[in-house]
Length: 297
Length: 297
Image (tube, rainbow over all chains, first blue to last red; front, side, top):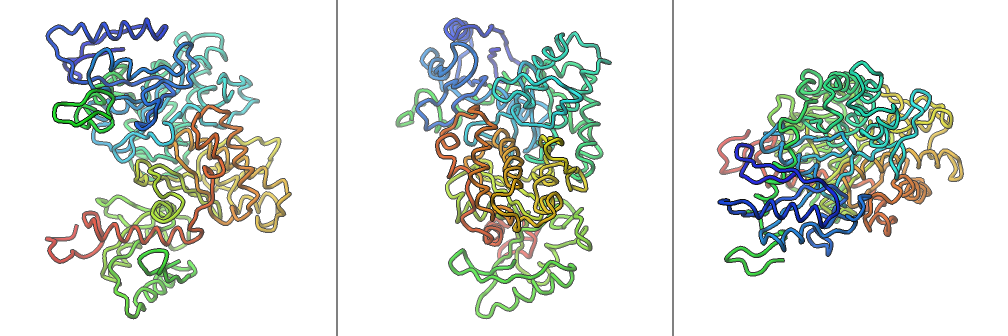
C-alpha cells in the first residue's frame, strides 16, 4: 500500500500486489513519480520483515531473512532512494502502524502502547516512553511461546521455526489449517473464536507484564471478526486475575483493548510519520544531504 | 540494603531486615542520618512492588498491592523525604538494578538490555532506547505465562495469582515446593536445574521477541548455581531456532546471557543513579525545592 500526502485528510492511496521485488518496486516507483503537482519531500517505508534497522550496518534498509521468495537480502531502502532521490525513513510495518496510531489514531497522547496485527502473521509494535522499540533486531512478538493444551487443541502449530508459538497457533493461516476453513468463513459462534481469544489474551497478558502498555490496539484481518474483542477482554482480565492493579485495565477494558482508529491505513500513515521524521532529523537518513549539510552518512 | 556514596568505589553499605514498615524505616533513617562528615544530596529508592511510579498520582511513591504484611498502601517515598529533607528518586528494585548495570556494570553502552532477578520472586527491568519501562504500572515480568507440560512437571505452580506463571514455576520458593529442598541444597547434576533452565529460557525467548534486548543479565539467589548459565544459553538458542538472526545472540551467546557485573550491589548502586537523576532533574521529584526553584511539585 502506497500513499502520498501530509496526513489522513489528503492521503492518496494505491495498492500494489507484493510479487517479485523488481515488479513490485517498479510499480511503487511509478506511483511516486506520477504525483503531478505534488513535490515529494521524503519517503517512509514500513516493511515486512525481518529487516535491518541499524543505521551503522552495511545492510541498513534491507529486508533480511524473510521466507518470502526473492526478497531475502533485498536492498529496499536504497533502491527507492536511487529512484526517487529523497530521504528515506525505514522501519517495520508494525512499528510504522504504531507510529501512525500514535500521531493520528488511538495512541494519541499515550507514550506507551501496543499495536498488534493478527492476519497472515502476527506482529507487534510498541511505543515505550514515546519511542518504538528497535534494540538488537526489532520485536518479533508473534513468535513468543504460550501455553498450548494439546488435549484441548491437538493442532501442532504452523510456524516453520517454532511450531506452536503464538503465530503458529493463532494467525489466519493457523486457523485455516486447524479448522479447514478461512477465518472469515467461520461463523461468530464457532468454537474457533473462543480458542483464538484465549491464545491472543495469553499474548496480551505477557505483554501487559512486560512492556506495561497504557492501551492495546488489535488490527489485521482476523480481528475483523468483531465478536473477538469482548472475548479477548474478558479472557485477559481472567488471566491477569487482578494482579496488575491499574484503573484503565480494571475499569476501562473496552477502551484498553480496542481496534486501531486508522484501520488498514495505520501502516501507510505511519510511514508518512517516518518520512517526516527522517526529513526533520537527517542524522540517520538514507538519502542525499539537504542544502547546508556537509555530507550524507 | 542501604548505601551512601557517589558510585561503586566509595560505596558504604548496610543491610536492614525487612520487618514491619515502622521498624524497617527507622533503621534506614538512622543509617542515613549517621553519615558523619558526608552530606546527603539526594536519596534513590529501588523498592519491591508493586509501586506507584506516576508523579501525578496522589499515591506516587507508595508501595501498593503487595502481599507483604503491613506494607500495603505504604507511603515509602514521602516518609523518607519527611525524615531526610532531600529529593527522593523512586523506582522498582529491578528498574534500579538495571539502571545500576547500565551505569557501572554489564549494561554500559547498551541502550536496550534486560535485567532479570531469579530468587524469592522473579522480576525484570528493561532499558528500551536508554530508558527503563514504566508505562501503565511497571513491568511484572515474572508473571508471564509460559508452556507448562504437566506430564513432565506435575507441580501446579506456586503463584497465588496465576499458579503456573514463570514465577510460579521457576522462583526459588517454587523450586523448594517442587523438590522439597531449597535451591541452594540441590546438587548441580539434579534434574531440577535442567527444568529450571528450560523455564527461564522460555521467558528469555519471549522477551527477546518482545523488547529485543542487546544483552540479558541474570541475577538473584537461584542464579548462584553457575551451571544454570550454559544450560539456559543452549535452551534459548534451541527455542529461538535461528529465527532471530542477530550476531550477538547467535555468535556471542556467552556474553549475550551473562551475570550482572555489580552482583548483589546492582540495586543499591542503581538507587544511587536514581538519586543523582532526581537531583539533576527536579521536575518529578519528591522533596523540597532547590534554591532558585519556585515551588516543588
